[in-house]
Length: 326
Ligand code: 5GP
Ligand code: MN
Image 1 (tube, rainbow, N blue to C red):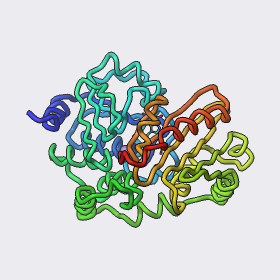
Image 2: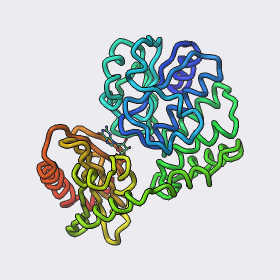
Image 3: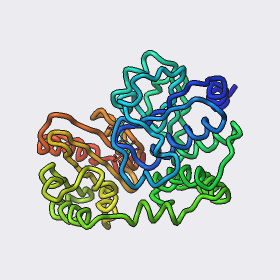
Image 4: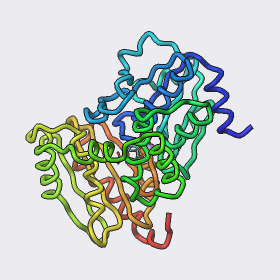
């Protein structure tokens, strides 16, 4: 039996299921959690869904996202099966990590840095998004789609491909996007909610990032400190997507954004254009991701220290790395 069918048969045979996503959730993660949980509910199962972090307000405009609960709300639930989506390592589920040790776990993901930490792992690195794997699974199980579910599921395909423009955009993701649109998904709604909802404060935060920006040959980097967020009345979600602005610069191969929120907690976002495999750098620092988009996180450190460490590793990786398309 193929891995895909093994996952389907496990999902079909269990009744009491918890679907988990990752901390600092993005569109693909939220879409995958909500779409899989809703799909399983439509098959008559008892399903709960959770993410151990805040969900940015605009994702709550999508159907089924309000069914995603917090760590605290899940305290008394004892699932027979946990399905972890879009997570390359067990720490990505936050405080749910301990629960994974005592339960049967399926991992559904598309990160090449996946540690295969489930009892059953379906990791398709050729998939542009996890949400399209979820769609294929829902379809194989006979889940009935309406325009609401189709739109929620389409969200992940759109956001993980940068609205069908990143290097992971291929015929497969476009075909599944077309199927979802045929089922009633609304591309314009998704694009306007995600891309056209920036607050004036976010523009000021973007200006701050540009003010701090430094260029070193083919490397561009910038940072936002906790004080920057506080002084503008912003939180960490407000800088989502900013690193792509850095990568959009001419003649740049690598863009790195350091964000500190709250004090001492630093997230590093890496993006590359053509040849540097940034997932290798992020993995070496305890994080993970894809060749062209990766990240890692630190706790209890000074921003300057993180910047120094990450930059020296990146400069090292860039020397001679040009020949090694990854
Ligand atoms: P972002 O820079 O947008 O936070 O993340 C880019 C990619 O790297 C995403 O696929 C995300 O899942 C992954 N990623 C970001 N931060 C981490 C991390 O701390 N650990 C792991 N394993 N992956 C991460
Ligand atoms: Mn993803």
